[in-house]
Image (cartoon, rainbow, N blue to C red):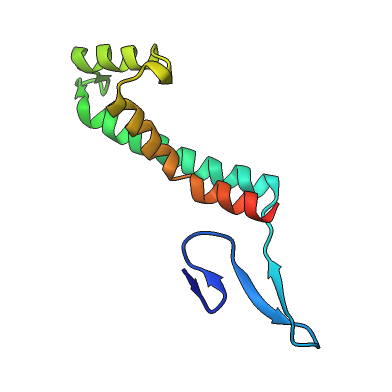
Length: 114
């Protein structure tokens, strides 16, 4: 959705400018490759952090502070790690798609202005 020339859905922002003849001119903020990397790294870190919070919530803690992954989860996660994406179940694939959906707006913004 565009409000006062600003894309509020996470895309690049743009303002309307008019030249002396009244023709509309668009000026966009461009994202360079380093900014893209930083934004993607931020999303990757958030995803990893969320996963670690979940993993630790599933573990049992020892008095020494070690986290022990329950055997059934360790077996399942090892199987998933050893399985190619193409061979995952549809539910597992959807979980990966849901994670990727968080970065699509950043990629669209970069593609739009590059």
